[in-house]
Image (cartoon, rainbow, N blue to C red; front, side, top):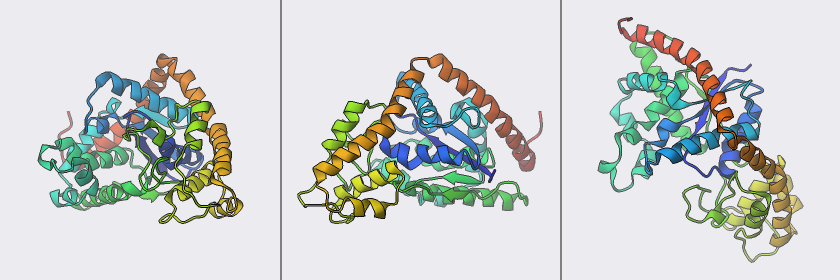
Length: 332
């Protein structure tokens, strides 16, 4: 094994193609190379509205089902829910006493999510990156699969780990390295090639949900926004929709983008979208079917999560005990 990885997805509903190509699919390959810990980060999910307890529970099971349906093996990997392991919150408090306010003030994601009402934003949203650092470092993970939008949080994580080590003159926490993988790490909307595919977009046609059936997947691809030019070309600034669909095809086919662009250079948009629809159905419909099967038995999902939490707790509680010793907390 090449070290230990940790990553997670928020259970906020409507997992989509971007989540799959940008994260979950890559984790399936990584479980062959690393000791892998994959979390459903429900504590992060309550930093922003809506606060709907029943929906949060349902979405937590849905994310778990997506992990397994995509090919993450709960026997080989640790799959669990963040709130089931207390060490995440406990270590986050220690890190709150290590991280400087100036570091948090530089986090652009807080500014983006808080918007103009920064004074009314939840404190949890402000310290979100500190909890993210605790998520990873509770397991002393060496690598973190991240998207481009999370690179700043990873740098803060490394700053916190280094500051803790220097403050207490120890070499306890590793400085986690980023793993930025895959052709389509940034999947754009099917209705606007300049906007990221998002579960918050009011148009369901802007995304392919991992729960969509074959007919829905094909329909959404065929109705995806296109332009009036003949043939397809890779010009993200001038032809963002063409670039997005070519990028999605290359990722789903696991082929170099250059080869895909060359193959479809003379194709019409309609012909290309038909070919892409067939490919998307072949790759994604089985995942949706398996998710539906798993979600029909929530007790089975809950049993997997309980077993995963026990394995995660064994690692994190030992590391937390060592942190408490280093800090000087009195043993009980």
